[in-house]
Image (cartoon, rainbow, N blue to C red; front, side, top):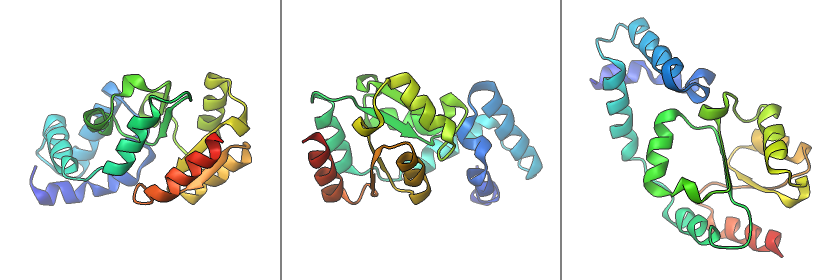
Length: 173
């Protein structure tokens, strides 16, 4: 896709539908947005462009290493993320998602953080007591909802690996 077309579509990343749709619904959503912006590009063009552009977005290497090490520990590991169908493709390049005990991905659940339902879904599926959950997120609003449900929380970005590591060590004690 031409950069100008891609830039005219940037608003879709702020729409809830982008993060909660998948399959045919996601393809129709993107196709309609392409038509609305007057783009001549197809869904496949958009997908290729999105994956190419976001392939250059760096993942937090130290965080990936820490997660990989924890996957071998005696604890449950889950991902709770607002993530598009395309982002799941790229996440799989960095992590073996089959090693996680649970995946709570907005694109598969049809809801996203900070919606209360996604947090209830985690509690229902895992059967864990809220105080046995450590939730790490980079958004204050998401942390507030997790706190409301009695979860242990850590507000941090992937760049704050020392803070994350300390919180995990303290939690596991």
